[in-house]
Image (cartoon, rainbow, N blue to C red; front, side):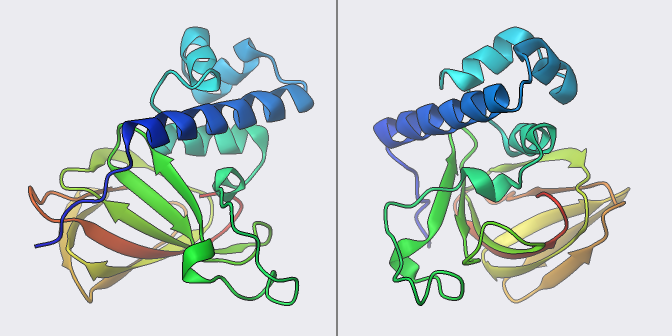
Length: 200
């Protein structure tokens, strides 16, 4: 049985502060007010302020909406303290040098497998703790596909629900509302995503 990987409380709080300050700095650099940002992502001004101060959790759909409002890919927020050699920088990602992103309070951790933060193609490894995910439908720009590396995952597409297990894969177009959820009570689900488009 796989034991869920959870970042420590200090690590999660540090991640919240890092992401929040990045959002604030980028918002100000683009001349977007708190009020305008709140309107763009359909949240309150108070909530956006809390996110920027690192005191509020940041679910994936909200970070996706913020990324679109700021005109950056979600991978812009990924972080690593490892710096690859110059000759590997645009081609290779070593296991211990992946850019990562912990979504505090969601049970979801993402690691960027792509060597570049720009471009249309992204590969992301997502680890869902037991019960992590949501049955709330969302859309994204561009196509995406996934491969279940371990565990199981519920995938909702429109009115249909599919149970995917290790070794299964799927593909989605940009105009299909969908959701994902690890319904297991004791096992992580690990998914490798391939994303094509402007944002994840």
